[in-house]
Image (tube, rainbow, N blue to C red):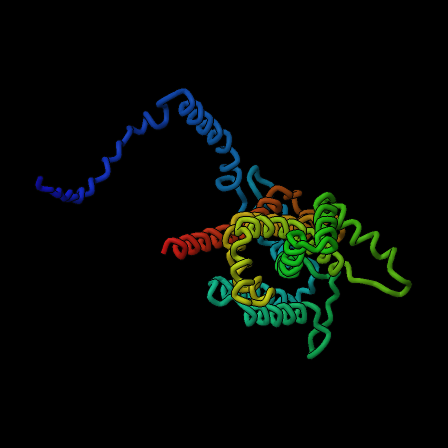
Length: 365
């Protein structure tokens, strides 16, 4: 019997073109079913409700006024914002020295722009930020080289908001790393202290922590000791941010599993080098959205320092609106301050989305 061998030849199947997208008429998209119709009608009703507010803010608004009495129309009084812009942006800082907070804002923006690319992240950038923060605080305080001394009670507006946001997040991040690693640690003391710190801070409202830092803390200090109110407020914000950042980072650490650390230990890599070079970069990449959310929340939470007597941008705006010469333009003031906060937070969000796209490209490439 003759044996026969059959060879199966597989032919490549040519790729097929994707099916064409079906273009639905616009009216079908807006009123194709009951849910779509309800959403469309609700949107139209909302726009109709907002039209009077838009007319108040633009058409009927007073943009320029020689005197406060000229701002008595039915629309918004945007002339007030122009007249009180320096007070809103710089608070009670001496007018002749306001070039210093302007320079502080410029330095902050330049440092943020210089830090956008992940390629420059590292020890040198941290040292550069440390030097920039020292320069900014020196400019705000003064007291030497011909600069007049300005106490923190005179600080206010945008520089205080930026300094509290940047410094609280900068100081909180290393502390949050230690707390996240401590909560993941096998050492019972480190794990217990980390859990106790995180749960206590997360269980206390930020307002209560600010009151403790601003009002109660000086009562427990020894006689003759004092801590600046702005410094105490910064400490409260830092502790609050560290607890929330620690839980975000812990989620990223748990997402890696134990394989990364075990492989590094097998190669003989020291513990802290393993954490800094291998574990943390991967963990941070996994939790960019919640890190962004925490940063945005901390920027907005700086507005709460107004209740303990620190003049941030919201507090300066509120003080400006109490001028009896103007027709109580609280709405315009709060809208302007809200726009400034939105601009900062939206910029953080856009930057985080750019980072996420870069992470996805590197992971797929």
